[in-house]
Image (tube, rainbow, N blue to C red; front, side):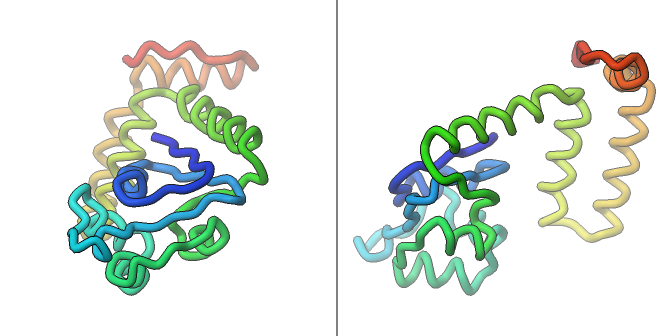
Length: 162
């Protein structure tokens, strides 16, 4: 899931994009998770996902002090992956990135995402074992064979999720 943030992204919107795989923002984007200053606790995963993205110290600063950050600071701390100058560029970049992902074999994308997500909760040895299992599954699938054939035939692959 690719999030494209233009303008203000506060509260539940902020927490929602912590669940996205990739976050992009326009240069004028602003981010805050102000629940604490209203006497509330974040309740949509912000206290669980945000520390994994930016580290516990930055998460505490954002959640406990309710500090607002701009796109540049969000990029520097690793909360977002890219900044585009304006809304049009943001939309074009987000759609291009999503299309690049969608153009790849579905099983390979699923497994890549699962392994990356599991890396936060497992040991290196467990993560490497997961990679090996996933790779063995993908070898010989129809989509994997199609990807290789399309590469050598210099054509766009047609994947069937098999």
